[in-house]
Structure formats: structure tokens, C-alpha cells
Image (cartoon, rainbow, N blue to C red; front, side, top):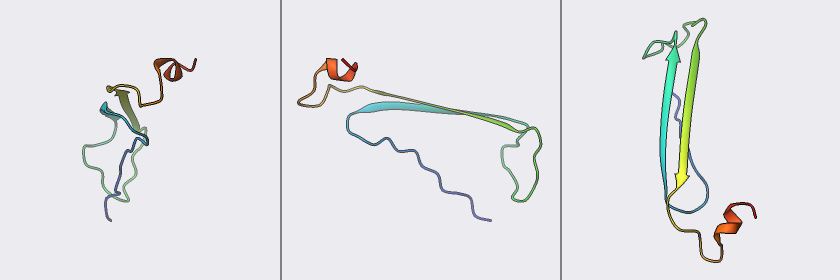
Length: 66
């Protein structure tokens, strides 16, 4: 069985920094296709923030929803 291809994309423009972290409970580091895992828990956290200036034609009030 082939491993799935995964990707995370953030549409839009602007410089940003991102970080992610996954925590697995009752799941080995390398899973086996077709094997059943019970009471498995996978928590994935993803955070990103814009680090650049607002785009031309926009001001800070637009970004705050004002």
C-alpha cells in the first residue's frame, strides 16, 4: 500500500510563519496497512500568523473587521 500524499496550503498573499505539531496516543511511529488500532488518538495542531505589512489598498482597520 502506498503512503498518502498530504499537503497544507494557505491561500492568499503575505509573508507568514507557521508551525505544526502532532501528538499520537496508542499509535506506533510507523503504522501498518490493514492492521487495526484501538483507542487511537491523534491530535494535530497547526498555527500560522501573518508577519508582513498589510496589502496595498488595505489598512489595519480592514484586518480587524472594522
